[in-house]
Amino acid sequence: MELTLNIPDLLIPAPLHVAFRLPATPALDPLLARADHRCENVGADRDPTFACFGLEPPYPLAALTAAADFVKTAGRDVVFAEPVHFSTGQEAVQLWPSRFLELTPGECAAIAAALNQHFCADGLQFESGSSGALYALFAAGERPATQPVDAARFMPLTEAQPVSCGRIDWRALQNEAQMLLHALPLNDARAAAGKPRVNGLWFWGEGDLPEPVRPDCDTILSNRAPVRQLANATGTALYVPHWAHWPVRAQRIMIDLDWLTPTVIDPEPQEWSHRLQRIDEKWFRPLAAALRRREFDVARIVTDSGTTRHTFTLTPSSLRMRFLRRAKPLHGYAAHA
Image (cartoon, rainbow, N blue to C red; front, side, top):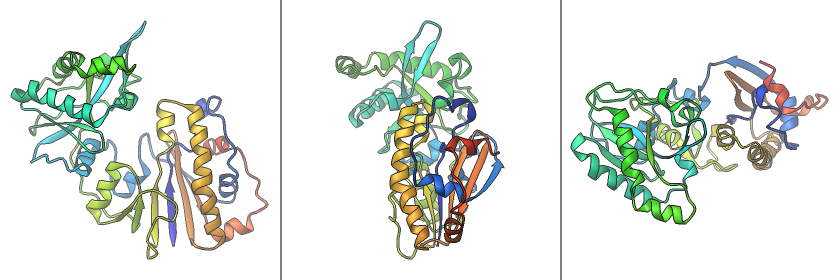
């Protein structure tokens, strides 16, 4: 039996080492020290789990997530219409994605209803999904070129605006939506509760729904909506990520664990350390025990550091025979490219 654990942002690029201080990881340290370590330059933003399905960036995240949410597109194109908060600082306007807003399902439905009422004559339809995402549906040929919301956060907003390719003026639409949302009654209740106002939309995530290839595994554990859609499209068994939450008959297991990524994007170094400690306890400790019991013939830990993909490959014999290898700080592996 083989296991591959894809865990982005386990290795932090060198410029951030001072901020991201390492917690104690007694299970992970000997695993990495005794593994065969291979580095590969894959370029920026190449997701190892998506790569297993034959996908290359930029990924059509809106189409994948909408399919996982069972949004009926009826042949129309789709992008995320993410509710955001714009705040004005001393030097620039700051964009805050929806994860900072703590939107309720009722608020998402109210936002979609207001947008549909206002923009129905423009050929746009807005749908909220069970994942919490909000989508804009529109005719083929009107797809904008956009910047992902997390990339736009760190760009001058004048350079991150959507670029129109057809009749719809996406930049004007985004500005009009900002005025509409600012005046929504739900914002008064949010302000009274001390929550940020929903005062804008950010369109992003464009691309065609892909025809993925079947991955080199028979079982996937993931919470991400796009990965769930890819697994369903390829007939790959899908489970939520808990250790040993896979069928006895599974032979090649892939675990998609993105717990660390949000703490690097924002960034939150203390939360990254806290989550890494939890991963060490919940995932790496049982992995080491399973290798000692020879439950896996091969186990791989796959992560990234900048544009470099790191693969740590372990076998029961390497874990047993290489006990004299000394562990080194986790940040040291990022320099091994």
